[in-house]
Image 1 (tube, rainbow, N blue to C red):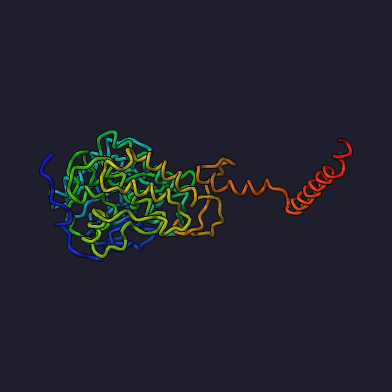
Image 2 (image 1 turned 120 degrees about the vertical axis):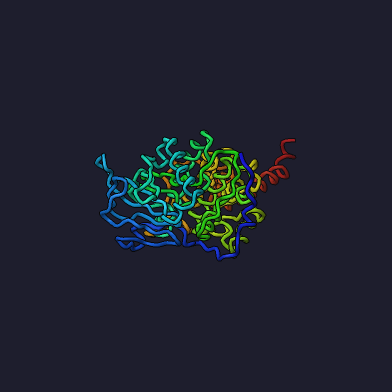
Length: 405
């Protein structure tokens, strides 16, 4: 398995950590992009629209990041468009990043699942830059949907459930994604009920049981984005398994429901790392008044410091979260354009008159008992009648009883 890398807290320097770090996914829809190149951190898109890379004709830039650029490109052999991910020229000179980039393609190409972005091919361009051709997902990602205010609580819960399917599939094959976060969750075009959810970016995926400390990237902002969703064992550089992804998935749900990352009050990357290692899990109910204690308990279990205290599978966590989130996705009026971070949320399909928890049954019992009680004026009349009847019985006993005896 190789030597363990030192704990991540020893690699960090204090930098601001915010809810909107600059390393987040950037889409063509949200950020103006020059037809020749765009820049985020130190990565540049060096291929102009219309240029050809390994036979793929570049049509436009889809996204840029600290490690490279993703283009929409026309497939050279088939009548379709693919997403062409190109590693930046600077990082192509780094052998470790070249290996990581190739590993992403190799690992993801072995995972055939409807909730995982498919890998079609990989190679090296004429100028030496590495590329991966993958399934093009027309739509957005969960982070962008959250920022746009279109992510309701019901939609967030459904997204987490779909990502959980992808993670369990990968975990069953010994693969840990290692970088689960809203920006890596793609949402294909469609209505909330039928949109496809796909997990992307297996660039730091690894086999279960290997040390978990993420590589130190040249742009520390990218490290901060990953750190906001990193499990304690990842930060400590310990061996990891699928439960590290479950922790990250819980952080992702926390972000999608509240609009904040867990431990968002931590100032600087070192403080953020220490919060993941030592601070108690944050409570969703502190941000969403309608959230129940049950939802806090579910999140706390998924964010347990000890992996053995977490859920055993991603789908187990997703199911528990969906059941506990009834209070924030119950039927209420929602204003158009309001996101999941608001207390007024949209509703799931009606579940009938069935009570979904013992607590709800207990809370509703007094109401039903009151409804069975007779009106107050009838109670008064019955009381008067009872008193009169009692007096009649006493008078009968005093006056008539001696006559009959």
